[in-house]
Length: 415
Image (cartoon, rainbow, N blue to C red; front, side):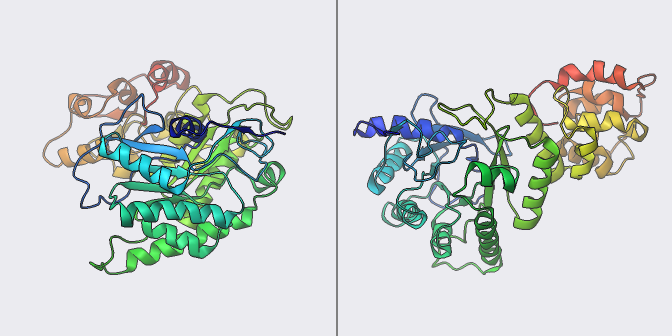
């Protein structure tokens, strides 16, 4: 298929390569250390090409320049709009162009950092060398102290991955699809064993960096923001149980900071192996909620979704509420006596709220109004707790609770 060459101006390249980067969801910049010379917060821009907005756990909006180095690619992954057989406009930044763009956006206070990915050109090592050269030049020649996230190439040389970690705050390697069989069928050039090997190598280097004493001669330790990955949801037949099983394994085996879930978007001239429509966006959101439960709320994957329940999360209500309705015998929970582990399982109570409840109850017996002041949705919490002046009374049937609580559960928020 003929390649459509893009115009050569920097603005045209930015338009094409920032748009091509929109399919990559893993661009959050939380979990890293601030660099000493980064004194101010970026104000961001909703209009500028290539600027994405990520959110840290404390709610701060963090603006990143999110671009591909190039959307040329020698691979022909069926699910990728930039695959070699795709008839899309192509463009490529030079190393100096990416550095110049990053510094221009940064000096204007539009961004706090750079998220850089790329198609594969010439070879994996050549592509990785170019990306490392960008990060190196930003750090050593431009004295750039902002955040850098590099999307690394799985089968690139381990030495190149190690060098990338010296300049980047976070590294990521996409797992691409939930199962090895799907990846081998849709992306034959990519090998699951290469992805796992590179993830394992990065984990060892990150853990080595944590154990080393700080040296004033070194600017920072290896990839202090850790590593992350991304899975495309809905491109194959994997159910939510299989997806969360893979995530559970990735967190346990490779110490990932984050697994990102990206709902499949239909692409032009797609293979007949791909679905014609994208999955519901609510499915992606429910997976993020389930992921949060596994990482921060003490839930096991089997408690959230099991193969016997058709393997899919309930799209109508969030997974914590779904678990609570299945285990009504565990409720109501006494907010004045229950341990932290059980309070975390109450629908509507987030981890920070639970910690505030535990702190407050040391000094006084909690009433319902005390809980209401601390949580965002008292109507969601009330059927599942008791307090000094409150008991849920007759709210014991599952359907009744689903009717009372479900409308609040439709809000796109985490617990």
